[in-house]
Image (tube, rainbow, N blue to C red):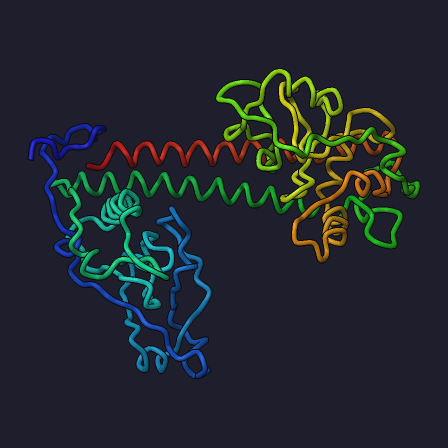
Length: 405
């Protein structure tokens, strides 16, 4: 068919793509099975056994293998030994996830795996992934959504007639995914580094100095009540009328690890905006964090054109620099305080009074500023790395849409 060509075509290829069923390109298909979990002789062997949770959504090049079975487990179940470089597709409980598995493996019954493909395996994986993502809304099922073996094998995909074009496309997306994985690993490393510093640069329970101290500081930290050093307010708790346009109203859903996310913001009138700001005007440099529902996710704001609802506001200034305070609010020390105050409550809520009564240990103003700047630098690296990962994922999504039929 003349129309069977992608919107973006690799240079040098002109022949139209042809329609094939998934079953026609797969030489062999394998189901899965689960050995009895009550028989210890079937488990902790040398044979990899995949379950649907081992496959990460949208990640085709990696598996998070956690379990192995024995030869006895394989021989006493419906599990099958599947050759390396087969495509494992989740058909239930996470339907649509898939991965090219680089080693011999077995799976649970939630998979259908395809081997001996007569198309490039990496092209096959990405074209099947794209097909399944488009059709997820039509998946049938009751308590467990899924697709049958017959339904999957009968699905039609479009395939380049030239094997070289298949291989080039498959390698392109594989390289892109490897790049995404490397940047995600770097992001995870930065997050672990930050978590470690938060644990070691603030005194633990019963201590007055942290395990890791900046050079030149030796004095013990002193306890302060937050309200004695900071101006603490909150936003409205009632819901104003929303409009298609107007002033943004920020709630806890807009607070993320890397700052404000204004993509799903409701809008209020100028009258409501002015009314809210009479008691809780947000300025650049202030800290806000959720106090109802999702508590925490503190953010130092870099804009002042919005109002707040169900959000605590800690004004800049006072005896504790906000660049230090926000880091303390990200520690497990403050997280534990939130947990204790919410024990037994069905609706998570941290009152303004509890925030004002909160006590913390602080060093000199100079040391607080240096600690804040040091940790802020790591935060900036995390933000930049998060943005890089997001951009690569968006690039991949765009290419997937335009490089397949």
